[in-house]
Length: 264
Ligand code: NAI
Image (tube, rainbow, N blue to C red; front, side):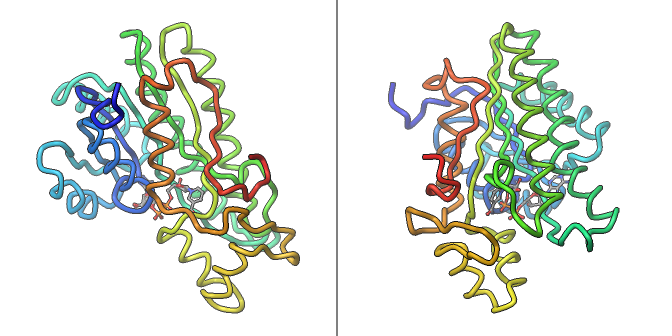
């Protein structure tokens, strides 16, 4: 089986699809033949992405923190586009601050998107996939879920919860032929990453170098492969996990971080 069109005939829903890693996931899934429902809280940006792909990509506004909106969107997608074969949870936010400075609203906002959102979307999809006996769900988490990072406690904890949630869901639905995996990226060149660099005391370039070379003050190793990931590097890992080539892979957490957490 060639990888080029191996997702032909599949329908995929992607959250956080308007930019960055989500947009790359849309692109790679569409290139490999899937029809894609590209959803994002930023509807105009999702629409601008979708028009580039003609009828292979349909855009919809969707805020993953709203459980009712998620249920309605999934029901409408199945009614108008067909059964969902693939769901990719990409929507995520980062509100960086040390714990002593972190306020309640930022803590809640991070969990609302990164953890509750994954629950809402995966639950709505799993209810339907299990009754059909097939389907694949991938959650884009973060390598920060597996290694402590200063200034990122809420983010890292929300991602660790999303990883464990996705594994537990995978266990429950495996007998129904549904696979659930996570992809955990390291630093990836997107707006989220650039915003982190901007906050670096030495400026954006110093922030970029600290990610690449490591930062002993932050107890942080660099990236052994010596490069920052492009969004498409993460998207290819997602596309593999949702494809039939990964048909015997479930409950897996695939790190795409150039070795930054020394797991490879
Ligand atoms: P980004 O900030 O460039 O894009 C995130 C997208 O999610 C945006 O289009 C935004 O509108 C959307 N979004 C935010 N809140 C939403 C909500 N409530 N409902 C629906 N959509 C919402 O982020 P990036 O870098 O592309 O990250 C994508 C995912 O990858 C996130 O889950 C992030 O935590 C994760 N990640 C990113 C890394 C990086 O270095 N860029 C590293 C590790 C993980």
